[in-house]
Length: 184
Image (cartoon, rainbow, N blue to C red; front, side, top):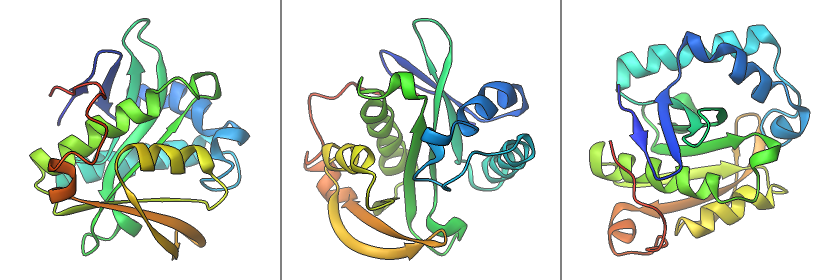
């Protein structure tokens, strides 16, 4: 399983040891407002971890727990997964962060690192991202990543704003070239 690092972040495949901090993240109503619309229960987070472990074993990618390297605290989670959890669909990138870490560039930094993994390691031909249409914060991260708005589509039991970027556009430098570099 792949661990990714940037100057400020360490991304580790989600595992049982992350339960307490992930539950704290996932049970925050503001964090989950545009994801599921409700805070997760402990059982929801346990089920998430079980799904992630199975996908890591099957596909070699899934959700990472995101740690701030300065203090070692879990500050978020991010993923490369199949859109709609269906292996027939393209790869999707996604993230969520603690409220106290919003507007500090962590989501963009993690997203750039995960996108590099999808394109360089997994050889994805394209990468999609979805968010609630009102989630302007995530939309801005998608745009900074070089993604283009594709439209509104039904995913995850709601209408989502869908963004996309091709591997060719990624390599051509549409993503912000000043963003931090990621290492595996």
